[in-house]
Image (cartoon, rainbow, N blue to C red; front, top):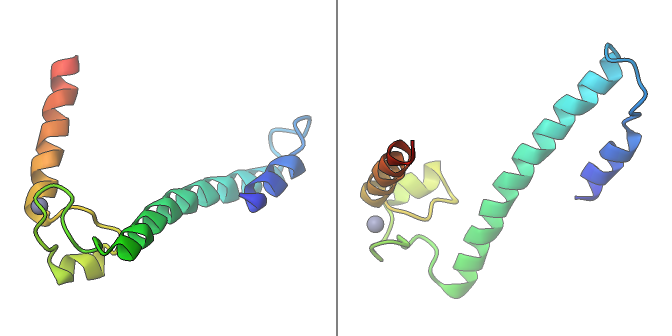
Length: 97
Ligand SMILES: [Zn+2]
């Protein structure tokens, strides 16, 4: 967060559009935003670890496949629930339009 504020205050709004420095900063900003999202889910996983619910599927309460947790440490759903949720959100998006 502090890093993002520092970057933001450094960006000069009057700078030329072609300023390579500004482009570079925007790239860093996007990177920071991506990392913040990642950090959020990791913090969530850490909270779960504290509560003793880490590695347990949020939806069905079954333990999540350890191989999956290794690949996606912040996973909160088991593979089958994730595919169900993804399918449901797809249906929701298509019925919205
Ligand atoms: Zn599940």
